[in-house]
Length: 157
Image: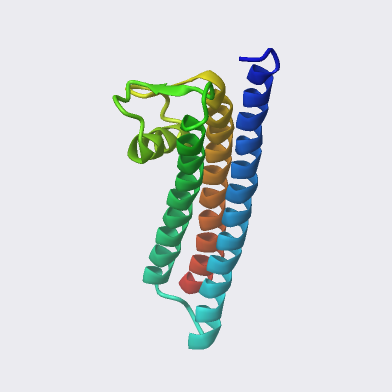
């Protein structure tokens, strides 16, 4: 291995983290904007208060956005596992897509590392995902709270 290769692998892992961050934040922004617009259009169409079941659909939509976000990072882990010297997942017998997605879901939800632990440069992706997951979960919780506060307050009048 040449002397500059480890830096190149770290740069690749950091690049994968940046791509996953941009994709995830963009996905959540567009998704929440769409969900909020859908909720408001439904409210305008019926000309009054929206039933609480509509908020449930919004929450399920937010959950779907989180699952897709975890898939984005999971694909990043899976792709980096195929790059020599990019790292491994300790605890996985054969680190495949399901192990990468499981690691991603545990990292995104900031549950922590238990049975699967990233080793090597892929830790850059894990660190970025923990930060992004925390932010996206807080953002979607704030979004849901604001929508509930605004519409449910109107419904109670």
